[in-house]
Image (cartoon, rainbow, N blue to C red; front, side, top):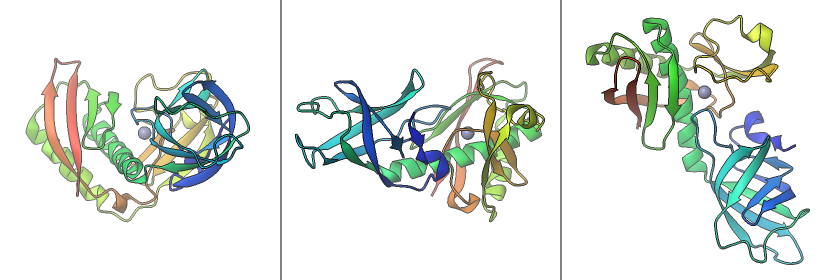
Length: 246
Ligand SMILES: [Zn+2]
């Protein structure tokens, strides 16, 4: 099992780790990681892995191009062509995150929760899919009401909330207890029944959400959002795209 440091402190940019398993020529499993594995609409982190203690290749650097969960393991995928002479089990490595990229996702993710909760509260809309990006984020949902003025109003409201000085809280709750919180699972079908303890991300007064993503500490870090585009792909398939400003 890999210790998930990114859940304990999303602001860790570097850490040491030990190679537990070389899954194939290009992928490694580590004893702990600051790299977020792709999931919940948030992309996997990128960065580098520097070998700090190995006879065969001291100070060798590997580019981490993606991180994902596979068979319950967190797999760090390394850039092609760097595997020789490769890593081996027991190697000590230093992990360095592409921080600017990750921080953008943290701001996007927190913004997405504020937007999701505002759409839920004001329109009764549940998000059916989402994709966080560096430049823009997409929400999929369904609703009868779909006009620009309505969404301009929603975005204005969201920006009002984002201007507040609000500290986020993260904690665990047993599933049964968590499920009593209205709207705690806003992403339909996002929670497999096997999960008995939920990680809750709370933006006090605004949103309480079962969530495994990385967030900013304070709403003020997000900035403002801008509505880029509304897309109508049929009543059951609406889309909204937004970006961060600045
Ligand atoms: Zn989330």
